[in-house]
Image (cartoon, rainbow, N blue to C red):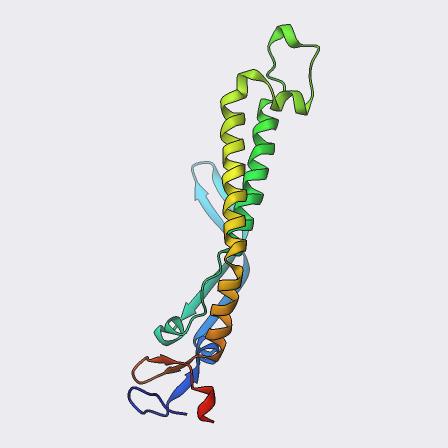
Length: 168
């Protein structure tokens, strides 16, 4: 196999180049310390975690097509949770003359929060619409991903190519 542009034989499948040049590091740790202030010594305890991804430029050039499906699902779930949070915030804020009405669903439809209700409905509809539009593009993404799996990249000049299947 050789590059059609520079004739180099230093070519790799994009999936291989991407995997070899991408590393993800995750670390967890605990820490402690003692600090001095006007009141005396204070002990500090804690824990933390860190995740980082490092990529070579070659791996970045060979990266797969980006999928927006996960982001769309996250936004719909976030919009739904935001609606619940807003209903909980409105809970218990009914006017004095409506004290006989209470509960979660009443709080959500409380007239004092009507602006927030409509804002959230619009947000939820927009998020669902975006998820549907992303789902409609899934066949295009799947075709692009399948093409990426067959694509080779030259390490010398960076040319991406799909070998002619009839040439074999």
